[in-house]
Amino acid sequence: MAAERKLSTTKCLTPTQYIALGSGSATRGRGGGTLRCFHFLLLYPLPPAGIENQTKVREFIFLGLTNVRSLQCYLSALFLRLYMARILGNGVIVAVILAEPRLHTPIYFFLGNLSSLDIFYSTVTVPKMLAGFLSGHQTISFTSCLAHLHFFHFLGSSEAMLLAIMAYDRYVAICNPLRYTQIMSPQACLLLAGVTWATGFLHALMHTVMTSRLHFCGPNRIHHFFCDIKPLLSLACSSTRLNLSLLHTVTGIIGVSPFILTLLSYLYIISFLFLKVRSWESRRKAFSTCTSHLTMIAVYYGTVIFTYMHPSSGSFKGEEMIITLVYSVITPALNPLIYTLRNSEVKYATRKFITRKLFPERN
Image (cartoon, rainbow, N blue to C red; front, side, top):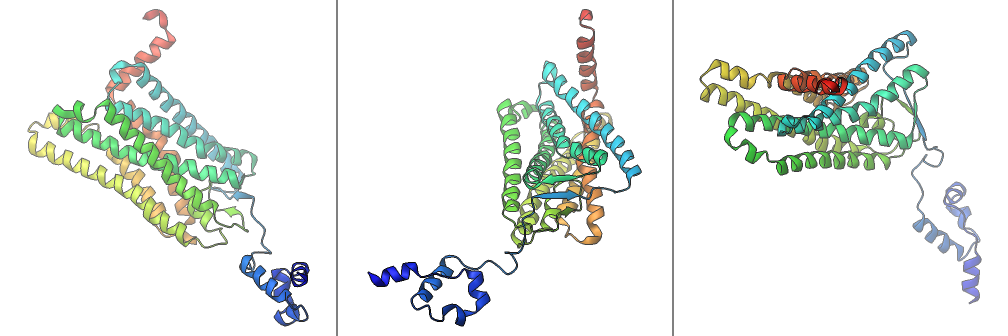
């Protein structure tokens, strides 16, 4: 009992003190305390060298697109107009699709989802960027940065898959019109849309969790205008090998697989139109809604694949920021014009909807 009491009251040095004093001085004259200190070191191993003196980063600073004040004012006015046009255009599209029964078809159901994604997608990045331009102080907390990252990749990956589903819808409508209503039934459309949103959410959640486990000890300046994965990984003090592997593999699959599906859908459409359809007028009408869609898909997927599959380097930070700006801000602002406003059916439904709301006495 006396030996146990002596062992329990023996004072043990902390791991840092133990190393600083040296094993000889730390154990000299301590008898049974040596064993207790050894057990303590096994239970509480020493942190990696340098971690004890590092402070945890609690906020980040965006370096943004430019630090020239006059250029910031110009860009804020430009992006504000794009943001308002994007919100207004996509909002009108969603309202028209919901209000007009003749637009309750699979392709317009997916267009409604795309417009909703674009509204949320732009709201993730543009307001914060505009606030930074106006105030000149672009900071964000660590928690808000993770939320930024999550919603950006959640909505972005969902949009990539939704574009592929829209291409598949065009393939079924052109190449197999007799079975179109059977294949693209309301249940199938809901399932495809649900899988798209759920996959995007899980994909973003994976990156958010993996990024939250990293240790950030400084610097805290992000060479970007929002919290993206690759700029954040470049600031981490701990190993990012697993994060980069997941980024290149999983995100590569999310980006490349829909692109391949889209490409195959359009290859089948082109081959069907040239081999089975004899009339040039019929070919033109069938393919008229596909050219703009295909062009925007090439721009969207091309920029995404280049950004997340290309290895980062200091010389490419500015180029990556511009490319991200294209597919996250500029391209989606054109979606209402590209996908719907050039469609005569949607234009007619939009005029009818606006007339009914502004001049109800004419109904």
